[in-house]
Length: 379
Image (cartoon, rainbow, N blue to C red; front, side, top):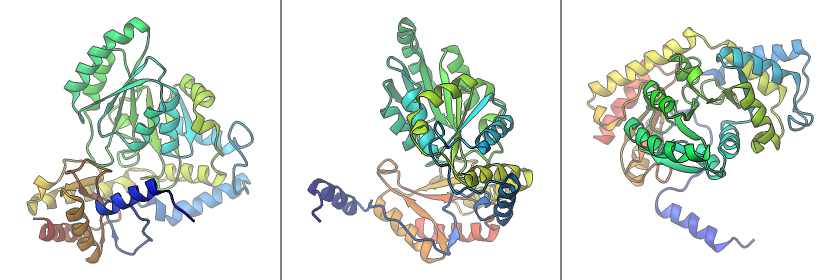
């Protein structure tokens, strides 16, 4: 079959730039790559408890049968959403099929024509895609730079006040490609002064910092919407938007990625609830011990200048250059460690990196060994 030449050229360019993405099969290397921060994906206890929960509830369905507004809104949805609202100390919760669906649905529907979106320049691709579908105007600010955000807020506050429009500020509590965090408390102070609305994506904070970084800092009542996902530390699938009952009602009526898709299966909802019930201090303590050990070792090995400062489960070693970054990743993989290179255009050219994802099930010996290998190849 003939393939379009323009598409062929784009693939060829990716190959030439050492940036062509491919799907890898599962391997037996030591995991420093997955988002399964707490090991919940592999938990037989969660698997067995989920099965038992479904049996006790007499849910013997393989799917939802349709969208939630038609036939797919089975009873587990309301049970899980009430549970999540209570857990996250929020008025209401709406479950989406994925973090991508949640971000697309929110940003394509909530900001209106005449509104302004101010977003961190390193915001996730799913948020960018949602913003592109919005009728609002969008402006980026320098990563985690409160001063620049404040200038933008002051400038646009004067403009939107005349038209009765709104300003939405978007950030992540833990950035997926850097592992760092904004000063949320300081951000909220300047946002309140300028009557704007804050949206925080908590995908990589949920579970790693208990109920998320916003809640850990007791700031949940200051945030218009939180987006949480279940496919990372919770080890399952799906996402939710946390906010007011009015926000939920609005999204049910206007978020197209919610309205026009088949709902999650009862099994998916049961797994979410069971995973939350396993989330406690014991499940996170080992992860944070490993984070502390990792940071201690990069200091001992004099690698600190290569790493972006982070207190999360994500630690990024900036190498620069797609070819060099891929070569070092390949060497680490050959030595038994699953480290993925993050290449441009996923990150800015010149900021290519190795991303180390830490888990509760990594041993301190594995952490020391992988960093000693890195020191051999990268310095």
